[in-house]
Length: 95
Image (cartoon, rainbow, N blue to C red; front, top):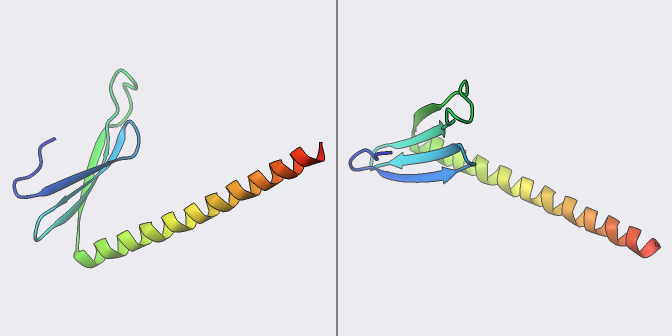
């Protein structure tokens, strides 16, 4: 897991086997997706690594899209949670 010379590396673990890594320097932004599947867990499971180099504008657009999706999903999850709590309190007070 060596970082290329002169690059900054940040890893975001998604779960036990998946990660997103961002490598950057003054001229490049690399986005790397990784999946590591231990042989003892799944002998036929694919382990892969893919990377793309992003232009600054594309990186901004991607970041904005991810933020918008995260905010929308967070709002929807909060609304579902509140609806579930209200439903439980109505059911609990009726008994």
